[in-house]
Image (cartoon, rainbow, N blue to C red; front, side):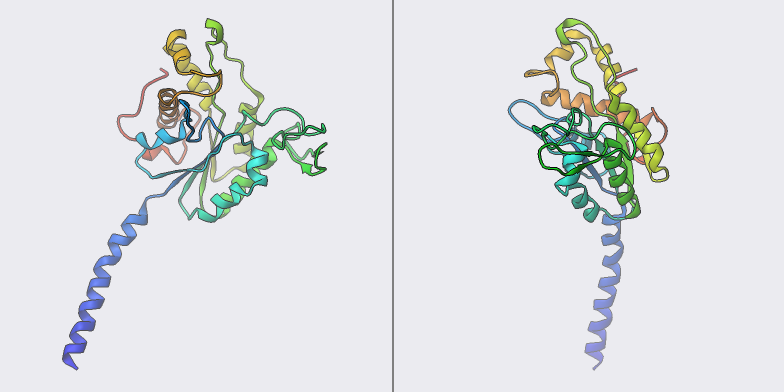
Length: 263
């Protein structure tokens, strides 16, 4: 009997000593990424910036970005729901869309990605499927609120710019989705923040110059090489570290020294 009691006490002690280790492993949040090809892991000499973020933050990064998606298609395919099911309280979700969100869903050739024009409760009908189509802001805000309700913190990031040195001439026209993302973060309120990744990268490209930036776009004006993806990730990390658009929950987790690529 004494031997059994001794074994039980020893087992309980071992369990108790193991518990703090297990809890410590779960103590830090996980960063989830939701976006398109400019954030996704790609191939054929191209790569988004998502795969490189872990070089500049101290947290594990789970990249759920996928090529060719918009706020609408990411929603309709259940990809936001997948992230919502995965997150636990304290996790951080970075959302960045815009490259595939333009156009109109009203035509018979609706590509399944275009959002309804507007920033609020406007609705459209797909000319191809008849589905109800909502605005960019609707999709982002719906996803962000669901994630915040799970205890996650959401960083709405503006889309990355295209090659700002196309044809050797610097141009920095700002797409409307940059302002839309900022407005979405404001509308969601507590639990959401905004990073103007577009402007951070644009400033970096101005600093790097035409020859260097053009070398980062080997196939088109939108998709970067792996080196380009790394540069774009650095711009994001710097923007977060310096509170470029206010404080985000990622600021605490940027590795020191933070990158300095755009000022």
